[in-house]
Amino acid sequence: PAMAALGRLYQKDGRFDELAELYRIEADQAEDVRQKVNKLYKMAEIYEVQLGKADEAVAAYKKVLELQTSYLPALKALGRIFGRLGRYPDLIEMYERELSITEDKAQAVFLLDKIGWTHEEKLGDLENAIKAYRRILSIVPNHLPAIRTLAKMYAAAKRWNDLLDISELEIDLTKDQKQIVSLLHKVGEIFEENLGDRAKAVERYQKVLALS
Image 1: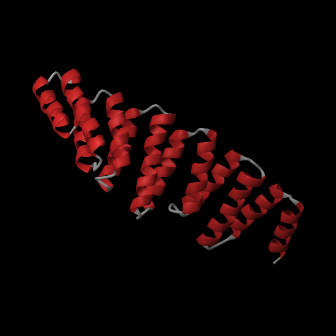
Image 2: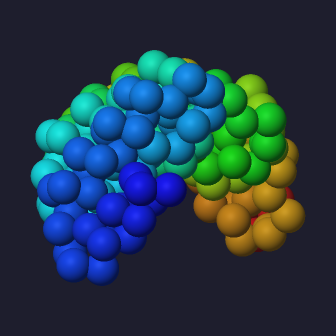
Image 3: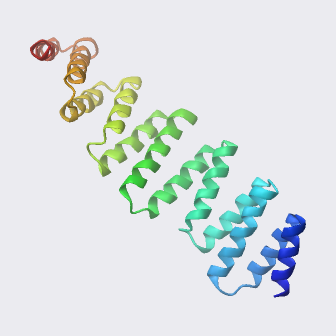
């Protein structure tokens, strides 16, 4: 009761350094793991939100995860801090840890999209970005946004055979005839200009004419 009363006073008076220290003492004294996690998480939140001490917050959230590796609020908090600080490899690690505990397909796709985007846009790592989007297709094989992103990446990486495969997959999944015509034309160009296969290029262009 005395600790709780002191905590209320520190909170009311805005004495957040002392409040954080109080939570640290309570965490050290707690015998139950859930109580330790709860107190350490509160301490971390104060460092992050009220005191703006990112390094201390990161250390505290990591202590939480040492006790409970799948504690989602701490994973999300670390991801938030790493994103804000531009610590992108650490951010990807947090996404991967969150991915390892999710059983929801939509959430897994969302996290893999974040991983792929971070690799490409923030780290300039096209190969690992491609791997992330391929992982999306291993979960949802007909995921058109991932297929279209991979097409863009394969073109940038000059991986023509992979680009052909993913374009053919998009053709199979697309219902819009104009889009199909556009994709067939693109495939024809790849055969003609990048792979030097005129016969296959002609075959695709003939399909375009038949549909136009």
